[in-house]
Image 1: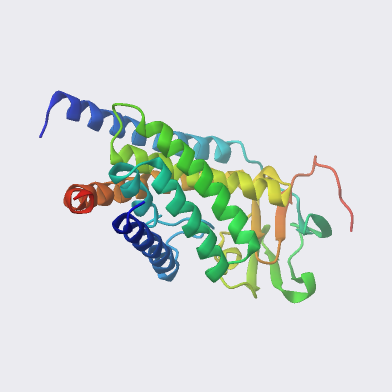
Image 2: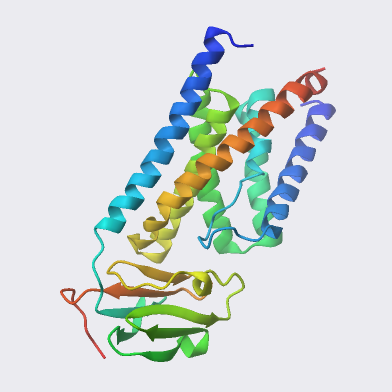
Length: 123
Length: 165
């Protein structure tokens, strides 16, 4: 029944959904626009950095004893294979901008892109 | 509590557990961890309207604990519990608004559930970077919330009289 109260409820619900989607889309667009090209990736396991690799040189690296395989090619980094059950890290798109990161929760592993003006350049 | 209510609530727990298990069988459409339809929330929303927040909260608490015990680990329990707690509080508060409906309640529940899990992940990983997953999770949580809310509304209209009799 389209009573006035029902109509108000529909408008309320629709506005709520619209606002949330708007928030999601705009925060996504803003964060994308703010990204800059990265210079290297830092690999952390369990919060501790175990390695870093420059994005300028191609290479394949076995991380964390081989649980995840990192590939750097043409300035982008991605996970080629992993032993985790969900393979979210493997299906992740290639990352190359500062702030982007690929996370493998089961292995507590994170590959993060840092810029040339960021600190920590061990290795 | 009478026997009929006890049986109904126990059935609700079992149903919610089955729903959350069935969800794990659906291959992830998007490669973002935590994206799910939240079908089990249908039960919580349903109970919120047919019984009240105490019954809905009890069933949700039992369901989260049992699901984690049976299908998950201690870590998954923390994530699920934080998501469920935040989403439950939000749903109860939104429901108090006169303009709310089962759909707006379940949208709130879905989005807050994801938000709660993201916050928990940030704390566990001691890294705020995971919050970059929030935008797609908010969007999918809203869309899923609409579907779940509509389903719950349908169930409420059909089953309310039968259960209350």
